[in-house]
Image (cartoon, rainbow, N blue to C red; front, side):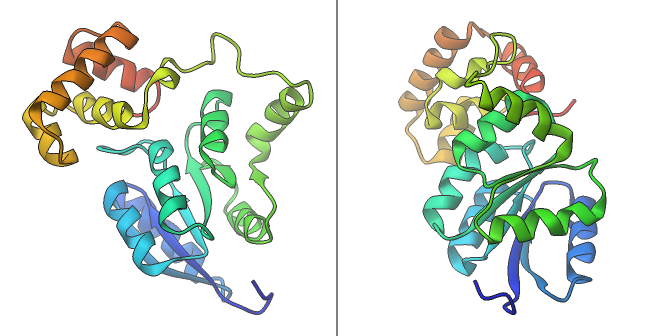
Length: 221
């Protein structure tokens, strides 16, 4: 991208007030243009496919489809689009999962507002960006070639992308029929996915699935 070109941005965050604040902040910078925003990750993916922005700013904790699971579909919908995670979760587990999924940067929502511009400019240049709040620990571990510790590893890592989608919907209380309708699957297929989730995660009720989702940062209390 040429230095004098405007950077087109889409916001995907399920909190309307956060989207409004980010939009106001970004639109105050002449080089940035917010071309769209969405509170639902699946609709956000469709918007990305339609508008092909330079940057998507993406939250992690969202109902239906998490930001972590939206990274891959966003990249497939618009390969040139850069993805900047903006999350309240600054733990190593979330950072590692986001980067492994293809995110170009990770910004803590506790960061100074000026850092948002720095992060966007960095990933548009083709660099990666990690918020200083998480970068030091992550980079030190990466240099040593260490993966996340057993305590930090996510039990959801054993799930397929489709199983993660089913898990996310079950976690917010959707019944099997509702999951089938949302994902355009047969009821039998959803039941099979649910059996796999129970086996892989040792979660045998909707309450246990919800508790795990909360613990993993994919569902807010």
